[in-house]
Length: 483
Image 1 (tube, rainbow, N blue to C red):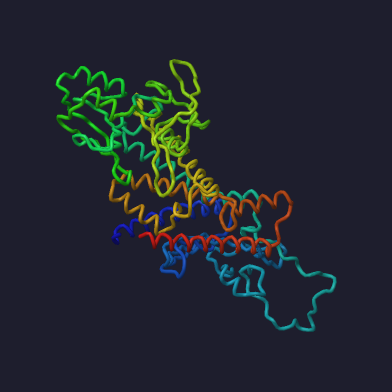
Image 2: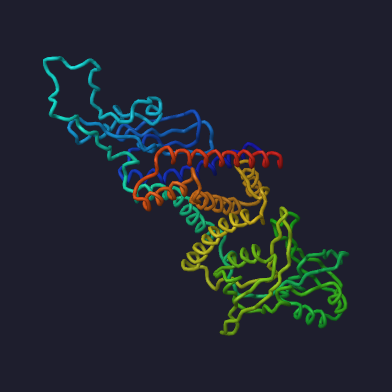
């Protein structure tokens, strides 16, 4: 793993963190919340510039993982103290107000200064006693403090960060579909089936697991078609085109083998028709649902069959204008990282045209499928289908980014989309210390009609953060060992 790939991974993390925190920042600003600091990275500051207009510090910190938007009143204890009972907003340059760090350092201060000099600590002269009948002015809440915002505003601010990551994924998906071009916009209509070589011994370069897709330059779309072509071949020597997966299953190789002897007897003993074809799927069927999940593009269809096809499937198809339900459709299986997946064994038609509606359709549905993939992964982890080895932290993700960068730019872009959507969805989980956890507490507040005690909320967030950090350490150790 070279330094260039590490820098690329840091660029990935930096971009995703920036977009996430920008969401919180923009919505907080729109809601009138005072922003103390916008930081990329964690730990000591490397560079920090403070805006003279808003008083916000924009910082780059040493550890290039994470980031935050520090808002006035996040701890729920900031008030404004004004001698006229109206309160005074912090001045534009930020002077006269305390940062969160300063507040935490002053255990006796629960107020944000109004910007006016604090009165002297000496007692008032005896000749000017305060009128006993005039009570001390009540401190008023600073309207710029986060804790003083209406409930819906706080929910919106928490929701904005994850939403920005999901929106970024959708935007980048449009770029991916556009760059990949017409060849990447497949439909869910079956164009043909793979004919697989099943014998253990290779035959003139054909290996077990290869799919025979062409004969003498013409496509082969079914076992019946292959039998017909071989029977009419005469001399039994053919130029055969096969598709073969690379060992890591990340690349499809298409090879042409010349002068391969094929006979009807060899076809019956060493080749097998597609399992899905044998289960009742036919050419020109349009797949509408996989186990009840609607599919609109080939990418959705492939994902659902891969994720669920380790066991027999129920497919809803449209055939010659009629809707049919096919039970017990079987696919080939393969095992990766100890998990069994389905392996679709058919080809589909491309979209008839590559225009704006087509790009929009594939962008939307492929992005929705990416969101569902994250949710399915969470369910898989909870159910035990996936183990801890299926979870990656920064080290593991860097390794995946390295592999993608060595493959192609489109693979890198696709990975960025998946990580961005993953970050957005995961942050919306109702777990303490995540944005979704904050939203859950606000919903509890809405039901109770009063907030939780700060001590209780603090304990909940602390325990959640400790558990997340502990999990992060375990995953990082696992990723380092796997290098």
